[in-house]
Amino acid sequence: MKEYNVILKKNLGHKYKLAHHRIVLKDPNIVINKRNYPLSPIKQEALKQQVVKLLKEGIIEELVSVYNNPVLLVSKKNGE
Image (cartoon, rainbow, N blue to C red; front, side, top):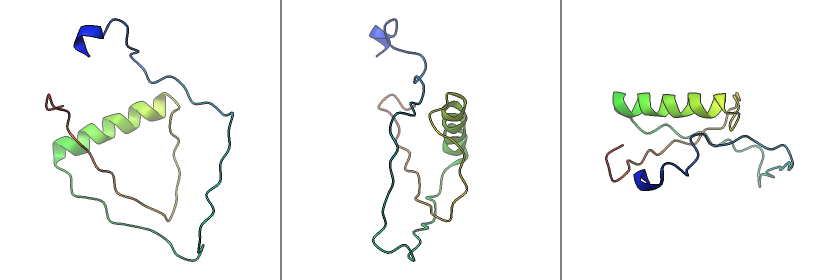
């Protein structure tokens, strides 16, 4: 990717509001709320930076919900 960094986008773009979707639950009375995986302070900071970037670019938005699924961070081959 470093070889082609001149042609690659620096940002992720913007969100589109063209399609709406709805997730229909089999049983709306069952709440899925799994504990987060433990993260090292370095990975916590990396996650925080990614979330801030995605919020600023409008890719994601803040939401308060009883549902939770853990984030799984995977390092790149170069260690990032």
